[in-house]
Length: 236
Image 1 (cartoon, rainbow, N blue to C red):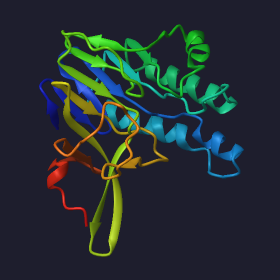
Image 2 (image 1 turned 90 degrees about the horizontal axis):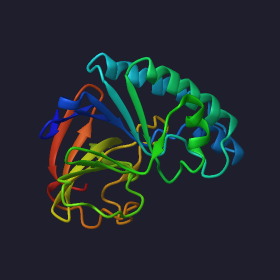
Image 3 (image 1 turned 135 degrees about the vertical axis):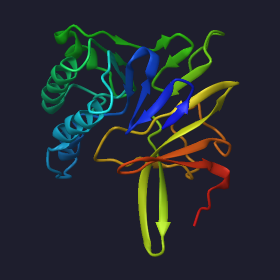
Image 4 (image 1 turned 120 degrees about the vertical axis):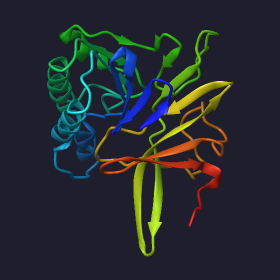
């Protein structure tokens, strides 16, 4: 589904058509080990699920460039063993399916460069492609006049939908405005976490305040659904 001029939603990623560029965000590799350290036991299957999700995307598009827009890894502090292993494995897989791989630093990526440098990949703070600015979205940055569109992650937007007695949460994209610039907020690519409900008053990204006029694009199992503006969605 097209979310903006020249930009399409492909599963939990964005596709810039004329640049053959795939963008995803908030993968949070190593989440399971971080949870284990807190005494929460979950099976270590996230890495394989993420690769399977990318394989599904690669049946639909063939990217020249792949961009991870922040929070590739999960632990704030040192790189955990699982983060080393899973990140190197994912890098090798992605490099087999594109010509260029770029990492944008997120707030969880304090030590990502240590791993990325082993594979010759630079970690940048932001990236501008023509009039599109990519940044993680955890802190405000100066936006130059040539930028018309901003793409961020960090917020992990999701929406809870109720059908009779059944309640289910779905990941979603948001599209609205930030200081007259078009702003697209991407959902988390992480398979273990569905994210934060868009109706919650607490917002993680400083680029988001009142999102009532933002459009919602819900990601289903097989297709994407345009739900209209947040303010028009019934909150039952």
